[in-house]
Length: 210
Image (cartoon, rainbow, N blue to C red; front, side, top):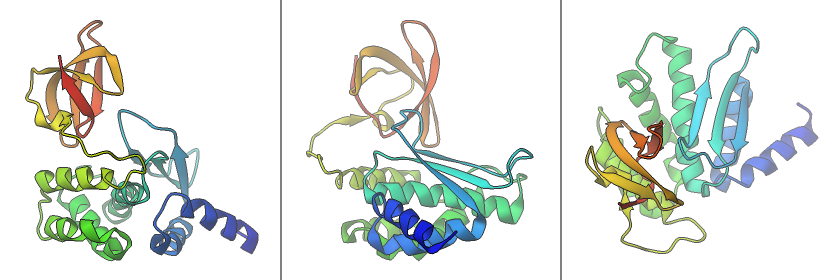
């Protein structure tokens, strides 16, 4: 990659990441030959990681481009932890098992200075032990949303606050009604009441019971 391309890449990263993280993330992507895809908003997931395949000899990470800079970094580190875990252990370990949790914990500690100061106490608490706490993770993701440019404090209900069997509408798509079936770590398996189709929905989605 020539100098002009490097500068362009870093400028693009700077549109989505905290300034302090840009050089470190660039060096990581360059070292591991990662293709980073910044995507439109996806309701079912915030990011994903794909290891090299026979048809392409590179790692792929995608992150939703509508996230604020701190939330973008939070999700990116999640996917980088998957890459690190694959590099160290291959595909023989659980996707979010002990090995991945340790890789994620180390990355968060390494990048802690790139997050907003109000997030640091929660990040420190989250990284204090393995297994990582889903309860603290949910609190962090709620606080991350406070940094959205259009954030307005509300008493909204999150999908994570419902119980299996509850019916709800997603605020962003109020025309459809869903039933919560079961929680699967950060997402819920849900059923569209009208056509019985099943979806995975992020547990931090804002909902209204119906």
